[in-house]
Image (cartoon, rainbow, N blue to C red; front, side, top):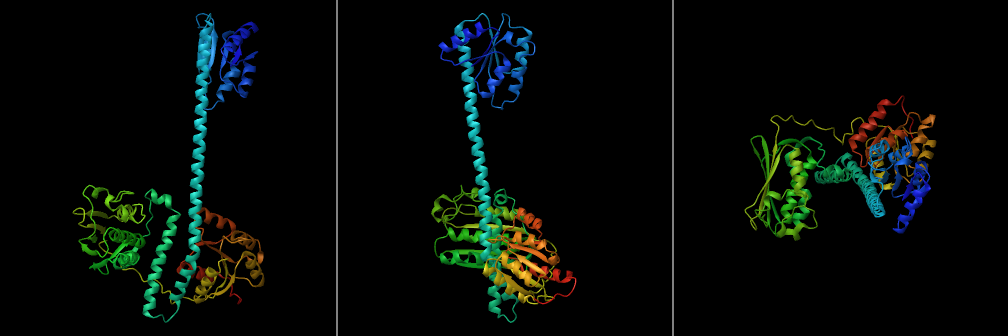
Length: 519
């Protein structure tokens, strides 16, 4: 307790009274000294009206203005009888938490008021502690959230590494002439499933967007039968494991939708998986697709355990599972049907469920609008033809040997002349031996990473015309900004699409100032 009184006698008396009550106090000559002591820590202030003077409380006012929002510093003001002086009025206006004690007063009243002020200050300190704990908790949550994002980014990066050689090998098979029909069909199926895996990896980087219901659609003209076939391929292992019989009736063969084929296949695959899980082994699962006016209607039904009437309105809610079938969830979180509804509604459609009750199966109906006049999709360029075969000199730089070797094989089939470096230092040495028109650089390499290699290339006048393309598993927006700042011309994520690589090769060939020398 700080004490400021006009005479030493008053200060001595107040100190003695408070000391007998077990309250520690400190005498100050004036408010200037008291304000200095407040910086070192004090619980409250006892001041006589006479010590305020005309402007004497200004140091205290300035100190109070610097306090945190939790602080409401208590001031006990000993006033003359009447308590209506100008000094008291100004103190009430400017000092905030002021309690006026009129003299003469009983010593017990002084002790009681002091203890009340100290208890109030103690509660403020406790509030400060709670706020500090809350701030620490919030900082911890932010840190954990950042680590989660970093984990997801790293996971996506690591998953892309095995994806790259797989997809590159598939593209190389596609580009080779004379493939048997059976091989072509297998390659097409693998490409579709690899595409699914790539999109799932991309979703790892957008998990917060998905939880907010902001799923981005990549619409294009798609054949309904292709979407259904992809969905069945994805669900076939689960159906076969349960020995279910699947019947498919798809009358609108050749019908086309403007939709996201991966997301739409995810809808039907989730419905088939749901039917497989909640149907006893050896059951029947049916998928019927038909046209109803201007709508595509797809029905997935089963003869499984059914849905209790009370649960029917809730089956599309997040984390909801049929109680009687909780053992059948196979570790699922109950988000599959929620995603189904979200994706269908994003396509402008509806999904509904019907069941006659427990043990009587369930039926899910998806309705999607079909455009009145859908133009035929223009045929894409043949990957076998590798239109205008490129003779670009390419240097591939990647410490992942499988990814580098498979990419080199695919680019060679596209007509490029390819060399490989398995690290940053090796890349710079090979550029000393012979220049390249295009350098495809992985970013996350040990030793000299791709960003530093790009910076060193850009500092060399003899390599001024080289096109630099980042080919990496890091694909977030800040990763693209970093690569552009390091001097890259393009930023591609693994596995790179063959058409993107073809376009890049042709762009380099078109922009070359003169015919290149062989590697």
